[in-house]
Length: 560
Ligand SMILES: Nc1ncnc2c1ncn2[C@@H]1O[C@H](COP(=O)(O)OP(=O)(O)OP(=O)(O)O)[C@@H](O)[C@H]1O
Image (cartoon, rainbow, N blue to C red; front, side, top):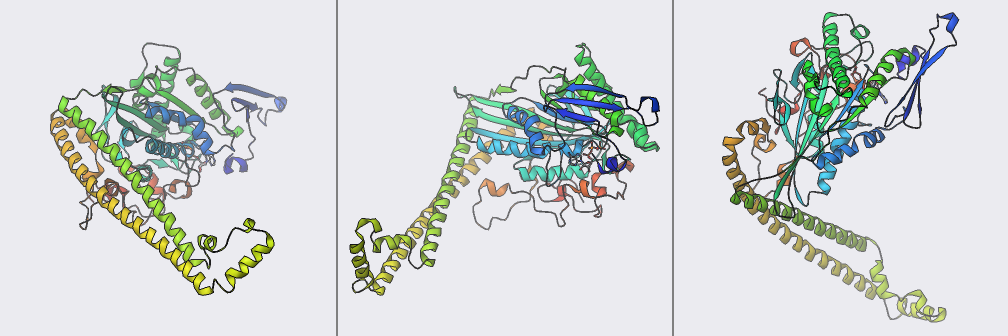
């Protein structure tokens, strides 16, 4: 229960039993003296119900982890949060620094999984983040003019939406932060940083590999993570014109969503997706081949009884929807023979590269261990290895003999000088091993760098050839994909060969770092931006002109 709700003296009207059943109790109004003791209730059953003590990780593992795995198998997945203003949708989806939400945990999990299975193929991750505000679609990663929705063979797409190629979790986090600051928010009576728009984060994972018959297979999976605006009535938020218009448009989208849910549940032929931008964008998630999860956020306070009942009602309806069977989006690449050979060679080279990197890492690990041993030998007065040369194991001889022997060693024959010489010998031996290993690693590094350079040149050559052939066919699509490498200024190599991993470093931190989670701590919106709407960045106490992540090297899309 929120602080405000507690202060208003509200009672808890929600009870969760068996992690599946939700009991909603309606208390009689305090003024209704005749029915003061009357309570009415409703009971709902869902796939899972979470208590307020549930961790974000638990919510992620129960709702989304399976979808992430399926996306890697080429199946589409969608997760959306639905509920009243202030019920915790953004908290569930985005979370805070200490408690990251579903979006963050899904991205982390996705990259971990890709890292684990990158031995048998090549993964490419593209990312886009958009919002639907007042029935117009905006690019959150590169704000500008509203985007137009078009239907093509991939489904509904926002024409001109920026697709960033992402290489690491950190990079995605930075993009999420950037996008989130551009999101339209406004304080309402129910929530200080209320999201006035629907936000959709889309992650497309392309996986290219060779099957048993040596065909090159391209597998594509799309994960959509959606944070809807609050489902409150316009009256519940504010009466001012802009808020009312917003409220009306938010409700229009959500009304359209409920009409689609109704039509889908009733098995109607015509589903009114076209009634709003939101439903057009969710077409795939609701009626297409997609694994879809709806998370309904509710407040346990009896003051929000109406909203809670409404949310649970729609969740209960939505659970009846059966999305289409979700087959893997896979295709055998029909490339000309020369190109197939090139693609296969590329995959083999990439595999070899990864193996070499692992070998190098192992050798470095070995070196570290030896160095640690050497350090220990230098610092301890009698290293264990040396001691074992000098003294026999205690159990080897009877007590008396041991005594004599030890006095013999420490006394006349094995003088301190001799002992010291033994220690020095052992340390020298260790140092020699370290040097030999260092030389071997140096040699391997040089070999590796040479091989990488040769392969890089080769890959570059292949991509150049590929670009030439696709220019005519996929020109438009290629234009939409912004490659980080093409945006990054040429690196200073100082004559040193750099492996691809060096080239794909995450962007440099901004001069003054903004917190990804400013939304949770800030409180005073001060500046009105684009078309009079406010964004999460205005909720921070920093000046609006703070450097944009997109202006960092590697993200420079807009001119200052
Ligand atoms: N499970 C939770 N644990 C702790 N705090 C929470 C939880 N859920 C929500 N909150 C807090 O409640 C407040 C409102 O939550 P949030 O902004 O996520 O609501 P919302 O449903 O997205 O609202 P809106 O529709 O207005 O955007 C935030 O300060 C958030 O940190």
